[in-house]
Image (cartoon, rainbow, N blue to C red; front, side):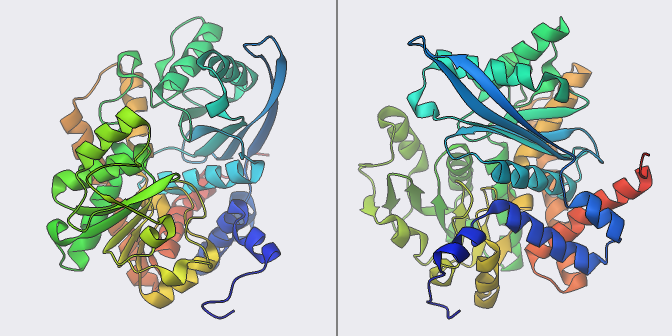
Length: 427
């Protein structure tokens, strides 16, 4: 296929399947590691996939049945860990891939968690708070025997938040007949949440971006950044990078994009979005086409929304020097080849956005200790693990002469395979 050719519809459908992408990247890492055939068979598939049907009475009295999933990919290194998303396009393949990515993500930053993920097919925008609570509580009750501090610890994800986690914690605790704060992370502070958790994924993105800048002898104040997505990850990345002196020249959202060559005032933009519900019509920037914004010249492009943002259809038009993947699975396998040919330095998702799972680990530890840390300590320990993950990944890349994504997968698969081998096969 030429650089400008468009893939066929079936080919693009294959390219956008997140589970196929996860499988492909795992297989490449396993090949390069010369992984034992048996271990390869074990690690390429989930341990458990749960599909549950969730009957809920809506506010108007109607009964609706929603479909929910929870997938445990691996618990070799510790309890499953991963978010729960509420969205109309949730699929088992997506949840399966996200669970695998959580396994590799925890291993890259070396926290003692396995990988899990969950989702419910629903449209939160069209649902009341009371309906969301009923869906959450019934979903929790349906998967109750599969979650817990020693089994699987959910967290927020797309369209879920601290309130959702409070409902899950309360539902689980009611069945246990005592309060169990460690069953979820991402909780409100006064219910056992951790300081620094809200900013954690964005802070992790900033940390690894700064590590990458050192390799190019670049300074934050000379670095132009484009951020796609202005939810928790995108907005926190923007806020923390802005505080560090980065020049955030463009923000891209689902309903529009903004550009300011001198850098956007991120605190003002966040206030505007809080007041209006949108980044559109922000007076201190010009509107720009969303695709044009993604493809403009910049030093750092940070996709922070959903999967499949960078594909074979647009990768050849990107003009960034560094791609920092704040979202899960934003780059397809086909796009990887194009980015490599262009010499773009990729900070892969399983490293770049691992700040969230790292501080989730800290929250879980604090819950189990009953002793809570101040934010400075949380951030110091986050910085330590993110820098170590970046250093270990780059060392693997140099040792094995592979790109950063392959190196991150090799590092993660090697760690999980070692733990699995040490435990042996229970028969």
